[in-house]
Image 1 (cartoon, rainbow, N blue to C red):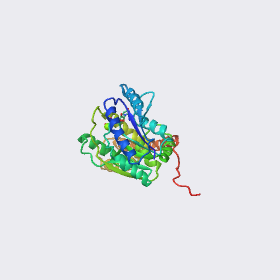
Image 2: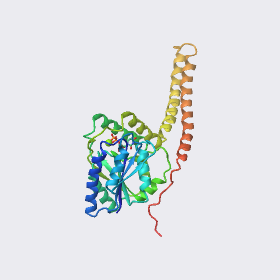
Image 3: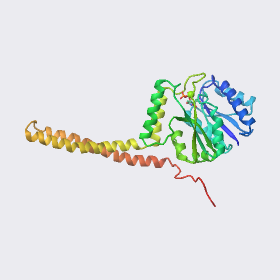
Length: 312
Ligand code: UDP
Ligand code: MG
């Protein structure tokens, strides 16, 4: 079996040499016990780094044929860099594993992922067994993110980041998703095929700083929801209906006040108008939004189906 590891790197000069050393060890061990072929590779994707990342990748490639590199024209962000790597290698390997350059995700899980692949699974999700090492802040924000995604009707694997094995066929399926707003965690489950999970401990970054500050994290979460779900639009429509129904209650209340004579001239009319009009406006926005949502989903040109088996 020909295994490719795909690793996006953005300003990772501090971690790359050590990462390469550890991955080389791991891959040699896997080759030695015959689990993966000698032609397996580690592919670094340079995502427009401003430091020596690409020079280091070139050096690694010269020293050891195990390492290869892809250099993007400029910084395109984690998801795009990962996709670039996956799509470049998809016809060359039997399976590939994506992981981060900082090796926060325990690379010993690779063994188990390969075993699962050999058992016939086509997607193996790496799942964090605990978040003890994460800060309280990262832990709570991440957990509310997964809960929010669930509420929005997006199918994501709980506590799974972009550490996963995908078979060549899954990569082929992934290539048929034409969307520009990439949220791989949401798309891979849509590809389907037989999948399973592998548990691992997540460690700390051994060098360098996180490339995901709060601002990028929030943007990523927002991207995840808006690129996978049109439920927010539905929520507006629902709110419109509720406010409109509420306005009937306000009408009754206002009429009672009116006939009891507790009001000044014109109050009843104004109070009812505000509620009824507000409700109708929200409802109208929701309905228009629903159509925009449909247009939005159509423009993605996602594949309508992928065939898992064909008996002939
Ligand atoms: N990364 C990238 N492009 C970017 C930002 C990050 O390719 O614009 C890569 C980065 O080099 C790393 C991975 O994405 O391999 C995850 O980043 P990081 O470890 O900083 O995120 P965290 O673990 O803090 O969430
Ligand atoms: Mg990291």
